[in-house]
Image (cartoon, rainbow, N blue to C red; front, side):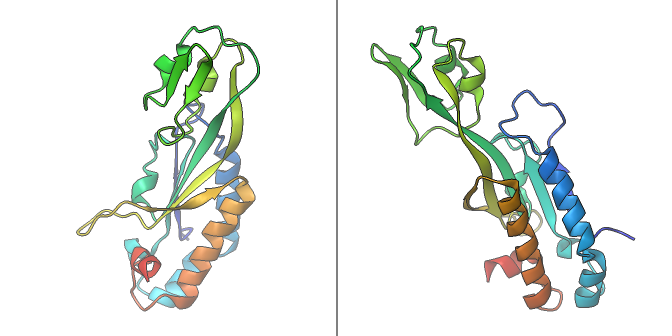
Length: 193
């Protein structure tokens, strides 16, 4: 029997990972399998079509190689940079590493433009002095992405800090869809209501 859901993920051991997704992947697989979604979807939507099956993407960083912006549920890891009291050496490695141009250096030290920063973790990985370290870490949640005849990017829902919060968000939303979804209603259309 099919599991009644699809989970896509980043490649293992990616050097760009801002947050490890493997534990969340295992927990989602376990909990969604326990829910017996295949049978519940079949009872609700028979015949179950591809667009009824929840599609979940786990990305370890904001790069989103596993396509979280076009899945029903997009979960992307983040880690915000934190500036410490450790003296900056002025090497500019962090400035060069930032694809978003969110970091600059001045005589007074490092400056981070939070409106540009994606919290990818690159700057922290390259800082040799320890001036930049990992700050808050968590998951960025997106909902309702799809491809097909009327494609749309998933919409930003918010950030959570724990795997448990991300897991609860996914399972609660799927159970709500099964309970309140209209006959043959696509998951993304339900989410828009």
